[in-house]
Image (cartoon, rainbow, N blue to C red; front, side, top):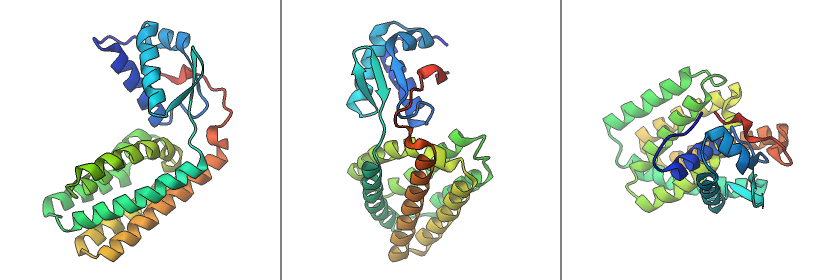
Length: 230
């Protein structure tokens, strides 16, 4: 499908970034500039500019001038990401418990209901979107913009990793159950319980992600091409 827009570089960048973060372009996928220009219906310049930008964010690596490869996230970095996520989200959730109101509680319960009714195998993108909204809503009430900026970076990397985990029935069920527990803890204002639930949620997600990555070969060495772009 051809892309028609004044800022083609931005549109190509957003398209490729969404495909990478959404798990459609997996680690190891080869992105040849010539193929991307044909698939997206644009010239080489916006493609090249978009790839350079994605490289600066660590999402791709250049193998040679006209060939990029979607970057893998090493296991050590995955573990580090979740360690930092636990600390930051725990602090944000504690602060949020001090500011929680009925309107926000209603929104959180509604989001959980929507996630609970999603078919994780057919509505994965919707499930991920709702999950992101749920966590952002909780952390946004901390009223700490610097903290949110740091979390956005972490959530971006985690989004690439959760795709395969959340499509499993076990991953979906566990995530929903822990979301309910977290909201109940926020209502109670018990900060020790909030920290424990956030920690268990993060560790459970980490364990599920590592298991799915091992089961899928972790994407390393893949020779997949960008033909999945739609």
